[in-house]
View 1 (spheres, rainbow, N blue to C red):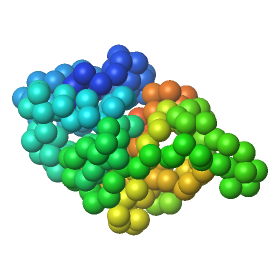
View 2 (cartoon, rainbow, N blue to C red):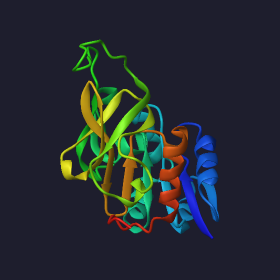
View 3 (cartoon, one colour):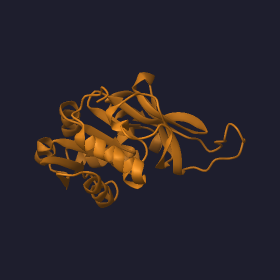
View 4 (tube, one colour):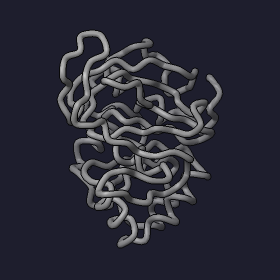
Length: 218
């Protein structure tokens, strides 16, 4: 039986995420933990997050989890969600500028206060909250069984701008075209919340539980 650890560093209600993973996954033990040893022993790791980037990085620093995340993200299937995805980048514009984990070149940018729909020219609300389509721009095992342009649930005011566009596995339009997902080797990261995205989200979590970390199509 495999073990999936959801990293707890004080950012958000992790119990809903744990319940969604447990619902989607058969024959797996789902644990919420901030214990470095427990995280390192897991077969798969989920790095979630909601809230401000400054608090995210402060929580990781306080719990001495930064080196742990760098290590496990190189060794086993690793899924980053929402602020977890943003934290993988080099920096964020949030909170007047925050240095992030620097695992990928690029930055996290603010949508802006005057965001408009390109077609209708209507003003768009910030945060981007609700359902939106994700165009699959890379073939990947975690998209298996999920139709292209399926809708996922988003809640965010900042978005990832990856320097290497070949990393973008899924994109979404909300005033700008932004990375809804990035992928490299054993890392898959999403801006949306799979645990709130009904069938498509549960399918992605089930795929993650079966994934061996190979980014080629199964």
